[in-house]
Image (cartoon, rainbow, N blue to C red):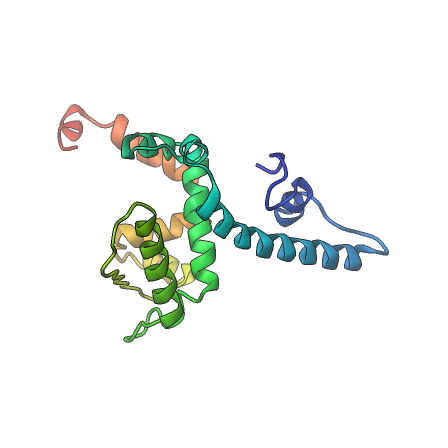
Length: 197
């Protein structure tokens, strides 16, 4: 993961952010400061480059990356690394635009996120001569923490599939152990158990 070619992040940036590289010694503080500054500048400039890519990248080049039909795009996004990158890229941008502001309260409104999403979907539509008349996003959210969920689980309470997924993604559990448990449940059960699937 950290040894890919330089992109928005350099190989050294990735190694430092993931903890593979540690700055030590007399100049460590300055090196960390410079690394953070360089990452911020490249990230800012990369986001500005998306305007150029959206407007000017040739269709055949875009199709090589994402596919040109819905079937090709579906196959391309079977590449878990690409799918995760797109998902996390959107999450990164939305998070930093404040999408979680107000989540978990009765009134969830975020004018900046609404405007960015509406304009992005409309902008994408115009590229294919599609008039997007409205965009709506309905978010149902609850504030919670891993420790609250772990406490409920320990107390014998039932957790929803979404809550269990949250625990798995929060690194509170060993995913390889969970996979083994699921594998055992699904593939090593009795014939009558398999009929229920």
